[in-house]
Image (cartoon, rainbow over all chains, first blue to last red; front, top):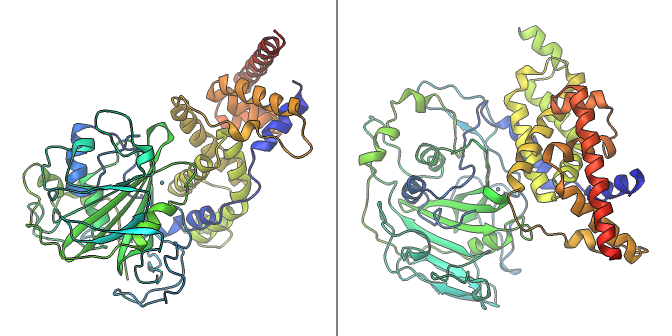
Length: 331
Length: 178
């Protein structure tokens, strides 16, 4: 090998095109607070993480050991018409923005408003199969070749059995990618869905009670799941789920694996969907396709409130908490 | 202080100044990260993370003309940290490395595979100096600024890296001939 060959080989590693979503994401950075919230960061399955993760991301934060592309979501139906959503003034602009929310005593920088793109109403593609969750009541589609392992009970605070053995989540997966272990755990590309009212009650000892909403989800996420190593994830607002604004959060994990989370609130309940992502699906197309088919149903889980070990860390009067800028949806 | 800040950003708000400089250097930064990391998706994450870090440390940039070197140091450090994590992976997709290009001969594809294997043996610090020297065409002094190490250390790393590459490729060639 000579120097010329080495130079040529290095040059071949350089991609020719700049991803459009990377540019949009970078240019949106000044819209954040000076200290960006730590977000989920690198995911590690520890006892504490599992317990806290369930409390917040009921859907499967727990499972995959191991970041969101910007761009238009999938079109589940070519004939579907664009329908105004239930939220305020949707925008067709797909540009995701991350903004800071100020809390008492905190002055956040002025930031542009977040807008959500209008999407077609949920529709299940012809070659997909509809699934109605027996526990959570929602309807969603999945590729016809996929299997579903449905939940047998709703997730609750203190869920004792998480991970592969948990039966509190609906698992959508390609049976060909089952992990060949004793749990037959859904492998790469699987989507896990769960819901709960874990965030609906009064939280902490402070006087301020913040109801669950698209605005407050990131706050609780930040409080309950502090980033273990301060590796920033990316959070975007470019997803709507059955008319509800949702967070799409990309998280780079250990060993270079990635997870994409979608978090949203409907009827006082927090919902979460999570998908593992590999290099072949960097735009989380599968998760977006799934979310585009999602329709809320009738889900009447009992209400929980966050108390006990979480209460102290959720005290709105906690200066260490209040001093941290956090993200929120601002219509 | 305000006057100094305005002077730094040429009268623009710091948000506008950041966006302008980021946009200007984004493509080259992305390519450099991709060459260092060998994975466009990882590079995308690294570049984003680096710009987040840069925004957080924006106050430390005193001269916008030095943005490239200032940000380059942040980017290289981000890639270095990521490389150290990624090195724990056992499986590396090298299919793109050995795919043949139009007009390419089989020997060329094998050469690329051999270079890829040899490059993977280098430490993250060695990989970075090789990329900065032979891809980015930086001088030793410029590399020293990027990696935050003395020029002598950079020289040493570069010497060790090229020697290791040569050794790995020689061994590989002998293995093929046998």
